[in-house]
Length: 356
Image (spheres, rainbow, N blue to C red):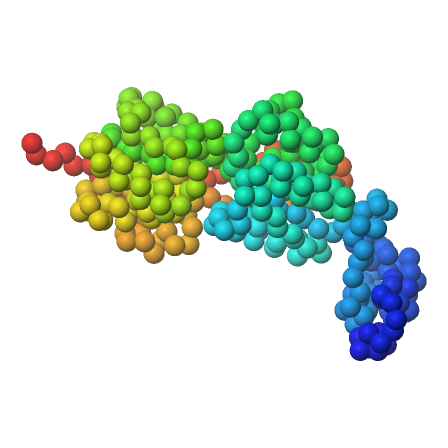
């Protein structure tokens, strides 16, 4: 039966039609669509071809009611336009495809209700993995939400790129070493002789921001350098070029004394470079700049940006592996911390004290 022929039939294509077309039983089709590993590759191929020929659509709601997992991994993030989210989602998608799952992406725009609705939908569909991606404001409301998610989703829920809300919430976590990365970046500037290092990043209370500020402070303390709080600009809700541009403008407007700038993201760094250039400050001759992320464009900036490399796609792959491992075996690691490292390019030079 061709797709054109099936389209002439009254009513919707059913699983029985798929079974007849593939020459197998309804039970075999059901097991194949559920991702049952006992189905042979040859039989699976016949079922998949029949599904394509007949344009059969799996009833995900019925699958959820039956208790069988939907072969899907969901990524829930604040903003899909974020380069960080895009790269992490690419890693999730890659592992999902390799393991015979598909990937769905939800954006919340920072709204708790949208996050809760997405989690509820994935619970109803019995998705195999639900990944909450990216930093978040660590509040009592957030901790209560995650506690509820863990109770309903269990090991299918993974916090990706954010820390555990607390020891009393047994959430699975895959994150990267924010503190260590910020410590390495700041230490590199301090080792180059810089003592007046400005920090431009996201707002206080945001998990990633607080960790990076902590790494910055620890490096300064270890080098015996007192932190000038006026050099920390941590009040941006959107970590974009504008944040870096306005941050540098504010430092210059307030006549702040600084010889280096460490930014919370490469995107912030790109805005900072523009503001410094417009002000006649040469990088790295007059001001050194270090970013955080090591996105593809960082090496194309003028000058090429020294930055902290984050394993974005590996973060996504690791989170997807963790969710599927715990669903399939009921066991696995509950916390993975991925390392970061500094990529040295051309935006930093040793500090030289000017005469006078």
